[in-house]
Every structure is written in structure tokens, then in C-alpha cells.
Image (cartoon, rainbow, N blue to C red; front, side, top):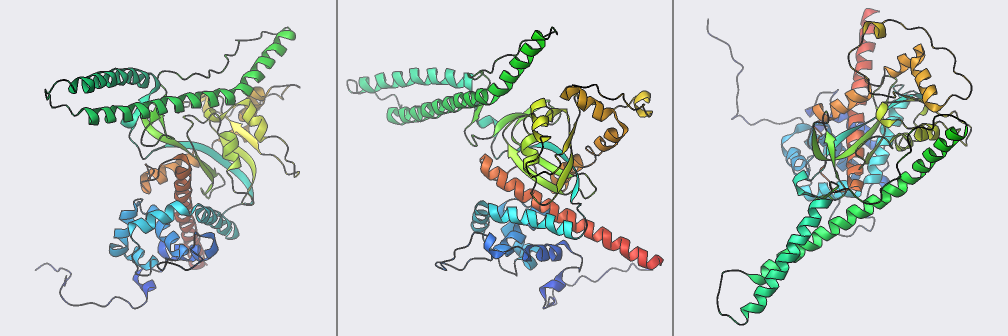
Length: 471
């Protein structure tokens, strides 16, 4: 019996549906996205209100185009431009118009306020639909995202000093050759003016790099000075009370080490440990505060140039959008813990609202669990009066309620970063500089939230349909 194949006819002319909405299934993300951006005020975008020049694309249309591009792994403005011709959903979102890549790139750079409004609007919509509780727990963590710069474009403080010395010697030799050229007609093929200009330009860049590294070291020392003074006072208090004072704290250093780096392509990015810590990359540290109550929505986001998370607890809590959630508990790993940061987060609020409670591991936890750890341990003894923050934190995580709450951390924030990097494919910033990286990370998180909320709505609709069928 002969095989039956579907007839593929590429020659007969076809008419697409006259309504653009009919090009896509009713439950497609593009429909949901279109409804989501339509509630955002047009005035939140960067608009030429004078009406001069060429016609401008509506900000809501451009926002939907960018968000769908990021959701589907298209981060380049040129890729998004090409997709408006080849992708049915992109044609639908753009109304069959085709903004060029320069227009898309300029729009992305100029519309931080619109992206922030979109980020907040998605969370407000999630709350109104019952997918986001007003009071709850958040998980904080950071992930390294590659900067739009190569680590091979960086120079260390020590290497810059050696290069400056070498270049100054070469400039001196070239100056001598230039003076000798007036008295001898010999042509050795060396373009002395061009070589001098190239070396002087390199010298200027290296001196600027060293100056920036030195300024960073002074700023870091100034920021670390209050913590150093607090440790000195605490040590003196222990010594006065007859207790063991412990190791004397080291004062902060205002001079850079020889390995501190400066990148010529993106000077604000840093060389940081990446992956499991076995290699280094030119990156930013992207932070996210994720709902730990089940929605997995990102509630706050920011980007820092700090290589670790030690000082990110306070900024992470501060990044939470006001009005979206009253935070009852904050879950973080050991990299976020410091007594000063936890004390600041848990300080009573001026408005009278309850301050969040921090749950932080004090040491890295092994993925392997022993039989004793798997067994239900007894509740810890009550804390003695005057217990320090470290003792309080250990006690919190030793209680059954604390252990159950802290388990939520790994299963909330880490999967979100996995989806952003593996499913959406976002591993490198397209924009340069920390301010623009912050803008792009906000757009990434808003795009993730749209994708996640669409999934939550679809799951709720499926459960409702099954319930009706069962009834």
C-alpha cells in the first residue's frame, strides 16, 4: 500500500487571515503580552511631544516587541528587527511594521522609566489575579552575567605600571630617533610620528586605568571603615569584660593590589569568579528577589559590580517594589550574611509596619545529607538573654519552622536564574556600563515575569477546566 503524505504546495497563492489576531492561537503569549502592555500609560515612555521630525513608533508597541524578543532569546536589536519580518508573533505585535535596529536600540537605552513601570504593572496584575500574596517571603540571590566586554581587554594595576615604564622608554627612544632624522637621510622604514602617537595614546589610557583603580581602592576603604571601627569597638568591649578578644581586625587598605583590574571596553564591569569558582570572567553581579510563596515572580532586581554578595542584603531588600508585598521573611545563603546588614534589615520601620526577619545560613551547606540530618532533630533550647546575632541566626535555622522556611530558598530563586539563562538564553548584557546593565536587567526581569505570569494564568485555566469537567 503506497504511503500517504501531506500535500505541500508552495506555488498556489494564499491569503492570510485579515485579522492579525487570527494568525496565532488564542492562548498564545503574544495576546497576553499585548493586553499587559496596553494598561501601561503611554506617557511613561520617552516621547517627542513636540511632534517634530519623523513619525515615532508608539512606546507600548515597542515595549511589547522588546519584551517578546527577550522572552524568546532575541536580545540583539538587529535580531529583533529581522524577526519583525520572519516571526508571525513579532509581526502581530508590531502591527506589521518594521522598526529598524537603530530605533530599537535607542528606545531600549532611553526608556528605563517605562521598563520600571512595566515591571511594576505585571506584579500589580499578578496580585489582582490572586497569584501574588500581599504578605509573604522572598528569596535573594545573585548570578554572574557576562559584560559586553572581553576579559582580555582588561589590564591589572601591576601590569599597567610595568607597561607605562616600557612605553616611556620607547617614547624616549623615538624622540631621539626623530632628532637624529634631521641630520641623517637614512630611511629605516619607521613611521616615527605614527609610532609616537600610538604609544602616547596607550600611555594616557594606562595612566587613566591606574588612576581609576586607585580611586576605587580609596572608595572601598572608606566604605569598609565603619565596619572596621565596629569590630575594633566590639573587640575592646570583650577585652574589658574579661573575655577572649579574638583576632585583631585588619584596617581597610586604601591602596590597590597588583592584580586589581580595569577593563578598557567596559570600565565599570569586573573580573569575577564564575561558575563553580574555577575560572574568571568579565561580568556584573545581577541580583534578584524572588517570591517564595509559589509564584516564582521576581519582585526586585538590581545589578552591582561587587564580586560577592556580602553587601547585597540591604540593597536587595530595598529593590523590592513598594506596595507589591510586605515582606515577612527574607531567605539568603551564607554569602549575604553580616551582622550589620541583618541588623539594618530587621530594624523597626518608621511607619510601624513589622520588619522582615532574615534567615541566613552561616556557612556553605553540603548537598549531601547525612542520616542524622534527615531525621527530625529536636527543637533547640530557648536563647539566653543577651544572645548575639550569630546565636540568634543559628537558633532560627535550628527550629522546625526555620528549617522548613529555609528549604524554599533553593527551590525558588535558583530555578528562576536557570530559566533566565537556559530557557530565555540571557547570559551576556548587550549594553555597557553599570547603569545600562541595570536597565537591561530590569527589562530581562520584566520579560521573565510576563512569561511566568502567562504560565500561571494558563495553569489556573487548565485546573478550572478540569474541575468543570469533573463536576
